[in-house]
Amino acid sequence: MEVLGESKMEIRNNKFLNTFDAEKLRRKREEGLIELRKQKRNQQVSRKRALQQEGGKKVEEPLVKCYEFFEFDLGLVSKELAEQCPELVKIELQNAERLQMLIEHIDALEELSALFHPIQTLRKILSCDGTPPLQFIMNSGISNKLISLLSCQYLPLQTESMWCVLNLATGQSHIVKMLMDQDVIEQLKAVLTSNDPELLELCVWCIGNLAGDSVDTRDKLTELVPQLTELIKKVSIDKWKNIIWALSNLCRGKPLPEREITQQILSIVPIILRVNDEDSLADCCWALSYISDGDNQRIQDIIDLGVLETLIQILGHDSEKVTIPCLRALGNIVTGNEDQTQKVLNLGFVDRVATFLISKKVSVKREALWTLSNITAGSDEQINLVLSHPCVNSVVECLKDSDFEIKKEALWTISNATHAKSPNLVLKVIELGAFPLLCDILDMKDSKILLVVLEAINNLLRAGNAAFSSDQEVKNNEVALKFDEIGGLSKMEELQEHPNTKIYKKVIEIMDEHYGLIEVTDENEPPQPQLFSFN
Image 1 (cartoon, rainbow, N blue to C red):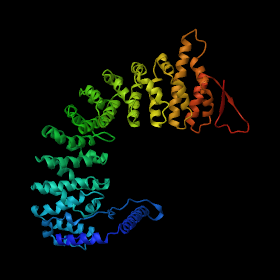
Image 2 (spheres, rainbow, N blue to C red):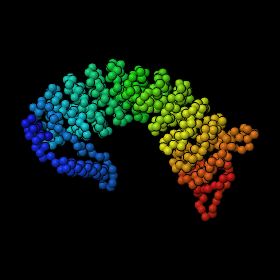
Image 3 (tube, one colour):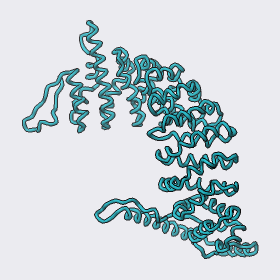
Image 4 (cartoon, rainbow, N blue to C red):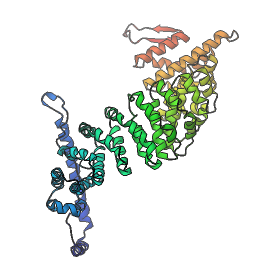
């Protein structure tokens, strides 16, 4: 782009108005887009070919080549930088050439005040929309100098360098790994001791980006958790947002960090949950959901905070951005032991969950059903709480839902309930009208779903048999008769031909236990799989 004075700009504008041809510009733009697509396609082909060696063995893709499209607008070059390095503003330079010249200029400078404008320009390039030249920068090796400048004693330069490293931290995993190998953690640890709010915020943001890359990187960064939790106590509430987000990333992923780390993060949760900020609440709840998705000891750590009642109240928040992670956290907690689950239920949790079942959003309804399925996997008392609640009618209706995920979670809720010890409690599923819907699910093709519904049907038949055995006035297993009436037996016969061996064996097990079977043989057919007709 050429730098023009006002008089030249006026001349150019006049010429532009006189020669403007919209159609010609449109064709030129389309040709440019086609060429760009061709270039990207060639890059993809080159990358795919680079993965092959003689004999077809795959190798790692080299990182030395760079396929980044970026613009180095001359407007990014300040007057001071242009005076320092006049070659940078040469019109004939290509973007990559100009960037390489800037990098070499930075690398050659030692005086901190002289480095400010070049690194500020580099920061602007890395912050531009589109595809910033992250790999170009990493390949140049200048990132080492940027990281070392994080500990310099010149705050404006320190801040600009922090911006650059932050932008690099948004790159792909191999770029993050390169930063980690360049001892970025030690420099970030030093920056966290700064008293400058802007520098601290950039540093925390960078830590959050790095931690979100992989579990391995996250674990290396957990040594910064004590400093981050202390920051919450030192900085003003309006500066908490990035810290909470970074901490949530530091407990995200499996396996979880060491319990000592998650306990340090949990220590500040009670004060965060009192903040009236949507983003802070959401990130805090996500952190709780990650930690609660561990063993019962992690769940107990959350319960011991005394925040369960607060979390139940947060479920009534206006924003789904907050309620979804909160529901996930509580849903994880009720996967704990019976006592842990009961502590949540005693606070009216099912009443709150019921409100999510009427949501039109699939993700919200699925989350609510998943939570209820965790409760019906508990004790008979907990199962009865769900089966006696008005929300169970919505669960049964969800068995008819056209969305596979909704139907699956509703099935798990009902199927788990059929594992109750009390036959009368199991038979309550039939009273709710779920039996014909379970029978309909036998038509589905998904093997996992079929195994779940077959288990539920078997439990219902067993409960019917238990009622028949204990009541002398009942002459037949009414559940078995009902299953035949709603077409269940016919569907079970069809399932004999299912290709999944587990399903075939489950069908035979059910029919042998509740109906008796006669093996059907054919001399002209191979013995496997066997077919049976049912009496």
